[in-house]
Length: 305
Image (cartoon, rainbow, N blue to C red):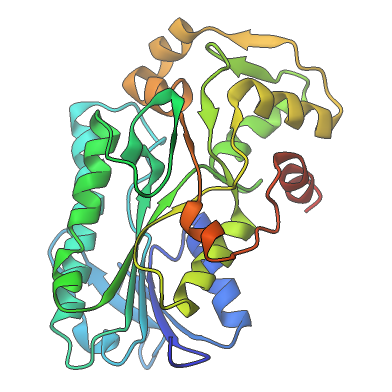
């Protein structure tokens, strides 16, 4: 990145990760614009209206922006994966990414960098193998979704814009996502491991996610897929054991696989009972330093907030 304080546009900036990115970039002195789905207030230069469903975007608001970050997409764990919900999950990612990719490719002064969200679901489920960015795509709904999601950046790449697909693992923070959903139960001493407990959780702290994304902006050697996971994944059982120890609570309960599948269907099976050991090889080989490489210290920092 040529500028030490680039101008950055973020889609999905109101979510947990998006808010962390906005804070981190503003603290660095970057000018940050947010793409929003309601019409901006008059005379604002920090908001850009867009509507991925209708295909409308105020192109002029993106002219001259150095970086575009796309974090838009419906929550994967929000509801059971009915056919309608699956369609929503696909459209919310593909339409938004296509719209951004095609729009920035046609700008008079396109951005230097396009960072677009993806997920480690790209690799599918495997309890034995180890995956990095060179590994092939897996099978199943989530793997297929991630492949389509990444392919939607094609126009930007074709026009020479450095494009990065950040394949994220579960992001840990007490205010949302995987950890926040479990924390109330663990605090009450009702923490439980799920199914066999052997499924791997390739987690990352919110602080490291934001720091890694910021690192990608300034490291022009990196493009393509980059895994945003901590270097030390753990099993579901280990995750619960460490969380219970940090909270000084018992850890004796177990939720059977059949109960999770009955309650959450395919969504629960994929997100809670399956997993893969996904390593951040490209970040490690480019000398990125994780603040929280180990789960215990990451959880302690989260809970101390």
